[in-house]
Length: 213
Image 1: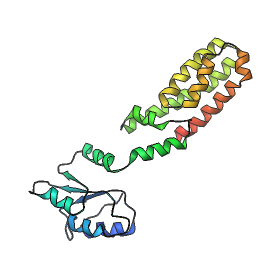
Image 2: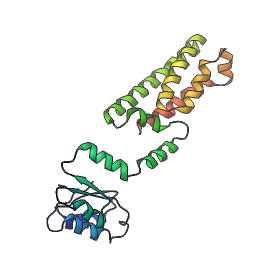
Image 3: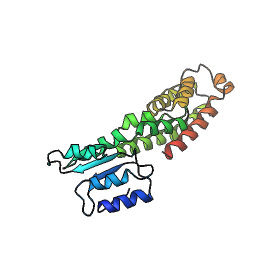
Image 4: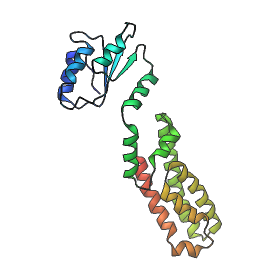
């Protein structure tokens, strides 16, 4: 993030950097926001960059003047935190970015599930991911213990539990594997299909993904 004390500095920053979105204070010294916007629009790669006017908003015709000068939107002071989030969501394509992130994980992790569940609460998102990781790490040892004891009922119940966690977190492949364990009717079936090994491998994989998002 870059900050400028006046319009001339804003132009200079744009000349030297790639900017995704600009909050342009209209009442700036040396070169006001409207003048700065007109210059920035002449720079390479800045014709489509969202530039949002920030102004006291009490001057008649101010909004129209800003839009005519090439600014994309208008924020009137005093500005609330929600106003900033709304503008970012409107003008920056977070959905495309999120989709690309999700695709990077294939069917192992649908990141949109976590994003939808935690909304915009970053502290809750962090806590939620930590809880998922802790639950999955604990389940690896439990799967191994039940399997070594040939405890089919324990494996069925654990499969059901981890399936619920996986579905909540968007862990599609893990949810499918643990559902197979939940519904398994014999230890031989688990052995023949190497389901415990597959689940442990998948859990290790998604834990690594979750720790890096």
